[in-house]
Length: 305
Image: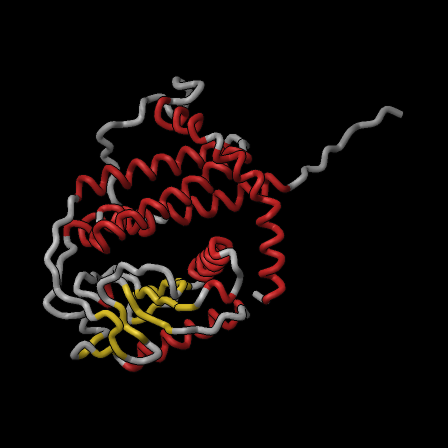
């Protein structure tokens, strides 16, 4: 992904922005359709009102990631020895980060490469990702920080989707972080400097499994409803609502991180959606709806004579 593609990306975004503003205006109508059954409440597949006490499960996270999450007495021994990261793991992570960022070919230099999240803390599990953060200054890419973030989010989403790199059976997740972005993790390890930036402290915590189930299910149902819009060939609405819902989920998680950190309900709901691949489903349907929206179908006409 070359620097000239960054300029092309900016021009495309400028073309999309007027539509996004229109789509946001559809919010009230969509919420009525989603929660009250829409214009045709008795038509399949939504013949029942939105459940007040949803019972959908949390998939692979149900037992271990929610009920089984707890503070261990030590950092994950397969990665750490006396709070020092395994040298081979560190080298691999540095190489992965460097190769990913090199392909972006952006002008901002790497300021640090860090490991964060539950595998840099005491609340890890067998399903925990290795959260690999590349720290840069967004302003050295472009003055429009939101545009830079959206571009880098797209790049890392594509990378994470196309690669499944496992280090000792734990998946690597890449994220490009702005140096000025508040980071709410209680454990941050600098891979470049091979030392702790924020050393974690063991803390006991409680998680409301029922609350997470209810909130995750509510968002999963909304994603299924946006998918139904695409299935009905309502591509404008599907694209707009997918974009709005993605932004809502990001804000929801950020609010939780700011209030309660990694153990907040909002962050655990986000992890649930990610593990159940609902975030991928939402991202995919947004892309598919946009592609359909921008495509033209050949209309063959039969001419007499």
